[in-house]
Image (cartoon, rainbow, N blue to C red; front, side, top):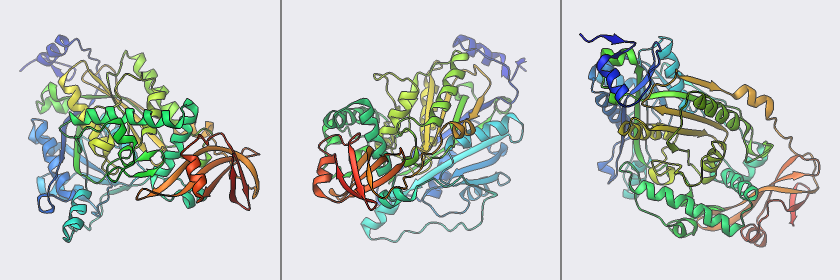
Amino acid sequence: MMAMKGCFTELQLQEIKQSNLELLPMKNRPVLVGIGSLQQKGSFEQLDEALILMEQATLDAIEDTNAPEIKNYIDEIQIPKGFWAYRDPGKWIAEKHGFAKAETSVTKIGVLQQNLINSACKKIIDGEIRASLIVGGEARFKMIQALKEGLPYEEMALTENPDNYVKAKEDLYVAEELDALGMMAVGYYAIIESAMRYKNQYSLKEHENFLGNYYERFSQIASKNPHAWNQKIFTADEIKTPSNTNQRIAYPYNKLHNTSWNVNQASALILTSDEIADKLKIPFEKRVYPLVSSETNHMVGVIQRPDLTSPVGLKLAAKYLLATAAQNNIKPTFYELYSCFPVAVQLFAEVLNIPENIDKTITGGMPFAGGPLNNYMLHATAQMIMKIREDNSEVGLITGVSGMMTKQALAIWSKNPAMDFESKDVTKKAEKLELPVPMSTLSSGEGKVIGCTTLYEKNVPLKAVFYAEDSQGHRLVLTSTGREIIKQVEAEECVGLKINFSNNRFVSLG
């Protein structure tokens, strides 16, 4: 038997030294040892429902470890809730494949997926669990194919509840913005985008070009990603120009600026400790380590945020992550920034100080790689693990979002266990520093536009929406269905302009 040092064999230590890696001792060091990631295309009959996709991703992750007995060590299964109606898909998978004693949980929308990873890591470190399976999947593409082919679509009925339901506070909407924008995210992000445009002093045309070029690069990266949902390369002109296949949804966003959630995709992650990985003889080349993570769950409605383009929680989370990484001489080489809409990427890039010439994605992003509801960060993590495995020197940084850029999370992964795993939730500090701006009590007066968009349906403009600040610095939401006003919003910069209202209604702009 080979001599051991810490939780590594001498042979493994030699491999580490040969790769110029540094090893620090840590009991129950969490490590990711297995990934599964898949997608399906085709006719209705060729497609599986979400449950089967998640099952296959799980089996692929188990196989990926090179240690099939890992399933005997899985003590928990965490699944982020999707569009599907299953009560407990984890228990069905576990009972079918021989690890039925695992405790199951389904996390509702609003819980950051990185939180699931952080939770698993902490439990592994504390010795509460031996291994964790985190798996998510969607089959909306199968649903769509059923409609196209005129076929019935029924999911397998799973009616038993999981051991735990994990809920977050409901995503916060202020009544006034909910009336104007509804619950679809695109309008809210478009308004934040307009504020970002104003801050960066782009003209409307410059900004449209910027967004087109920005996502053209994402499309190029997706074209080389075998796991991407859409591998077609779209030019900047195709992305920025509305068309029958690229409909405008909320100015300046077209379909190709939006996440693509009508997919059949699933991903699974298996985390355990180095000690168990050694016991099961999981090859070192399979191991990738979570180093540092941060998150914020501070919630403020978009209309009430003091600065639409500078979430305090995000700044705090990023500051902690970067400082901790710097203290341990850790520098990311790859990034996967959450890309539900372009402004999310920009906000993360800004707080992380990522230069313009550095790629912000390895997958191609959610419009092109695919954005399954409530589990994209699992897909991004699986893809990042693949990337890091290819080169021991690479370090990956991943970000995630929940709600209307409401909550954020960040994480750094590496082949080099260069530090003990650390994570921090900055919510409480953010709550103290970022207080909601009161809503206006004035029924008439004038104010200043702080963000705006126009909402579309089938390429037809319906109304303009303005977020504004009244004379007292309080916030209000105003709308107009006037054609000239809608045209004005798309022809000149309206953020910063004077806006007049009477009897709680829009009167004039400029």
